[in-house]
Structures are given as C-alpha cells and as structure tokens.
Length: 284
Image (tube, rainbow, N blue to C red):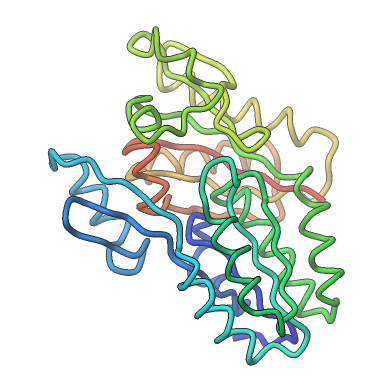
C-alpha cells in the first residue's frame, strides 16, 4: 500500500476497482442498503453479484441511506491519526445523497483535524477518476490544499453516460431528476442518461439497446474530442459482457491511457437496476 501524508476518503458509490484502492491506500466509507428488516454495508456485507441476483426475484424493494455522521466520525478519526497533513473526503453529488451532509457534520465534531470535503456533483467512476488523481498527487508529494484544488478543477473534465433497461428503479428511488419527462414513453425507448449539475439528466433516447450503447460511445467521444490523456471506465450492473464490449469499442476509437471495468455497487444498483451499462471518462 502506498504511503502519504494525506488520507483520502471516498464513499463506496465510486466503486473504484479494488486493486487500485489497495494500491493507492484509498479509504472507502460504505453507504447503507436497507432491504426489509436487513441492513447491509455497500459492497462489504453484500457483493454486487449477490445484490443483483436477489434484486431480480425479491418482491421487497431495497432502499438506500448515506453513511452516518458517526460512521464518518469514526473513520476520519482513524485515518486522520496516521495522516500528518490531513484528510481529503470526496463524495457523490449532494443532489443525489445526504453523504455530503454527514461528512460535513462529522468534520464539525473533529475541529482539531484538518479535513477538506469535496462534493463531486457526480458518482461512480466519474468520481473515482478524480479520487485516483488526488491519490497519485498525494503520493507525488502534493499538499492537502493542492490535492483538494486538483479534485475541484478536475470536475470539469469528467463525466459519464449510461443506458438503463428501465427507468423504474430511478423513479422508485426518487433520483430521476431531469430525466423525469422520459417516464411517459419509457416502454418505447432505451434512454441514455448522464449526471449533470449533480442530477440524473436525459442525454438521448433511442429504440434499441444496441443503438443506446452506440449512443453512449458517441456521447463520450464528443465529450473528449480534442482532449489529452483520456481515461475510461465501463460501468455495469450485472451486465459484464455488454460493458466489456462497450469498453473495447470505446477504447479502439479513443485510445485511452487507462481503462477499467467496474461493476456498480449495490447502493447505485438499487437506483439504476440490473442491465445498466455506461462509460465514465476523464481527461487532463
């Protein structure tokens, strides 16, 4: 595990590949999944594979909750003890979750610690890429202030597009945002979505899944046109083959310097549903 003077914390919805979390010493705080009378910590007590298998057949719909103030306080106290300069906390969009609020309250309970918090206004590997950039910068000797500035400035150079099998999960979870207008004709289309201004928004609608996947690649290609050092991550909810094919197609077109395959965590999966596939991107 890499050492640095800065501890970097990210919530579990980033779903950064485990080997990269370990390599860079990133600390992940799990979100909470509530399923009837059972409570799980995201990707800790229940894996994505277990979650998606159960989701297909269980008549009870799971709900989600942000990591609590106490959980943040305990983790920050623990990791902060070994971080000479301080802690950088990176969380998903405050428009999608109360995670930012929990982190902010926990910081107020630890006035003796230097803690910076960044609301990425996104999630999944669009958030994961900026966390990786911060971790690499910390390893290179950058200060807490420099790493925080890097994360904030990188937010204009990341994004994600995805297609879902159904809007039902986003609708049930109340996370549909600007894509709400798609509900009326959802049975006839395969929507392409993005996270913009912190909310799930419409990015296109087509008639077939094949066209939707092609549209995702086209949207990412347009977003990174003329940019350098492209990084890609294919995202999926129990649709690994489609995601792998999407990543190959996008990589052949865009020649990224870094490419990953990441399964969406149970907490994210509860909102997008099985069959979701997408691409997150980052550039310099």
